[in-house]
Length: 357
Image (tube, rainbow, N blue to C red; front, top):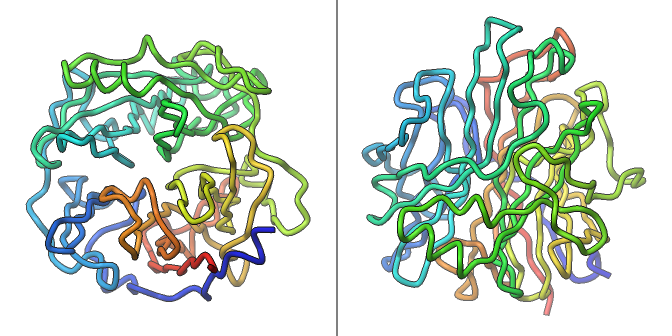
């Protein structure tokens, strides 16, 4: 029983809105340095450039702003509102960073223009100062369709939480869409060794990617194929806000928890932060609600995991017994039809998660 092994603190306010110099618009990539400091790469909706790079600590994540990193879009669209965002990355043994990347190709005025979202891979060979996008590897059936055709929705794939699985696969997760444009979370995977070799050569590993098909099968075509649902619904302690148009969202983070020998994926139900656990990156049978918005307004989004002990990997894709989960509470953003509210006001929180001995 995980509830007997895991202790989660009450939410702690880390930054008020007037203490943040950017609008939180994604999870942070994180890298612990040899001096113990932590670098944070993140995205900013409100200011140019739309990328932020900070040096800080677990206590003060955004203590010092560093020069912004640079992008090679590799001929993909770069004019706002289109863009690329590394939402998480994996550090290879030689220091190469593999970025799990969210790509948007949007036109926010013309509803007849397709609102396209993809997941892809980026690479950095200089510690995250420069990134090159290698190309798309996953999409949904909503891409290249009129926004009116998909019910006026922005079919945002979210992401990109991932695991470097013990079985030799990279697993990553995103918001999937069914043939009736129902939104839910699913995943895709690709073999790590082959992917790393291709990325090191500057090649897009798209041919290796398959979406989840149900059961223990991963063979669904990744660009327009529809993956199966993964996460249980109808849980008594999870509050759904279906007026938002979905039950779960994965603009979030993930980590393998060594002390539990389990994979942990952070998921949002709009007003809640939920930790789901799995033994195989596929079946998510256990969960704990980590935080609930009080009152039930605004969004709890964009989680970032930071390890607090020596068991954690430098990129925090693995953690030990003690770690923080940071997230924003957009207190005035409702995401209701015709009443989205204020997206730019952020209260930046964290909870501390401890696995008992």
